[in-house]
Length: 390
Ligand code: NDP
Ligand code: MG
Image 1: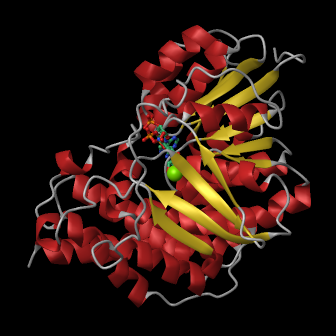
Image 2: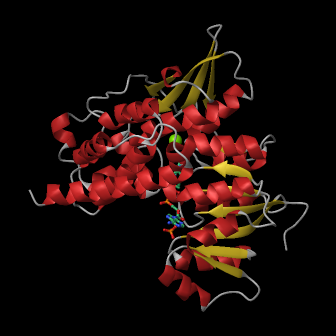
Image 3: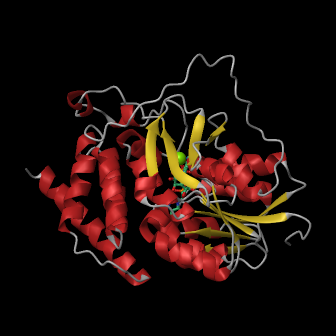
């Protein structure tokens, strides 16, 4: 049963980095939150433990084999949903108040739209959904009168600094750590291995976003995410490297005032805020240690060394189906890099090639976005195969 006195939460991607940290936040406040739904792709061992612990009303699993394996060992009375339809079904679970979307990749689009249509509050970690289908998602948010609270740390920071008032906003300063290869030369970048790229200096995250952070594609995706969330032009979004990840982002107002959000580099803070908004509660995260901080550094990102960031500005400015194409190609390229099929620097190069080949649809409907996404995945795979056979 859902509990009427608590916030009833569905977590899409409960076995991942954000999903598990969300459960830590929930563990800290069992009197406030209740888990009613959990969803993942194929990590059934973690999912089983979560089911034992949280007794959700429903779980969804997209991988068919994993679904079969999970079905045989489940709790009586708990509904198990399957596939992408299952993900959409659990996202609109009648007992849920809030849906935390923490799947990785554009697979988040359909369940996010399902949750919006069912008028759930959305806590959104999954940036790829806004990148690929931001116009449609934001229009649905408006039409259904639901709240969308960002979980991504920079966007949570901006959301808190703006605090509902965009009237005086001049510019968003989106901060970036610069990733593990900030000081590498172009030559060094060509020799980056998967192990090297999977080590982020400040944040512990899932593999895809960790690689994106190393190429700066993550920051590029976040530029597009900020454009949609805060309805600002791309020339009002500036990326600022702040390598200590202490300032999570800033807004500049028309009178020359800057508002910044500071805190420990701990995702449980923005996750919790998305669940308690507009209220706040004690967090399991450590406080920021100012006395242990010797300095804060600022610098401009190097878009020549990290072309993914300029590709994202280009995709965002072009609009239409281009961001979906860039995102889908990037998902494939990152996967191929992790499988050892392409080099680190090939990721952005191949994404660019896919974007160059794309026939843009300027004002796409949802189906156009899905088709562009699929086309980009196939085209990217073909280019990678060609590369391998060279
Ligand atoms: P992880 O790779 O750690 O976790 C991804 C989660 O999504 C897993 O639960 C995975 O299930 C699930 N998933 C992936 N594909 C599917 C699918 N096809 N169907 C159902 N479930 C699926 O990623 P993160 O937690 O790091 O990131 C999640 C999202 O949050 C991303 O969009 C990322 O950009 C964003 N984000 C993450 C941050 C972080 O600190 N980690 C910070 C800001 C944003 P399974 O385990 O079964 O594969
Ligand atoms: Mg971020």
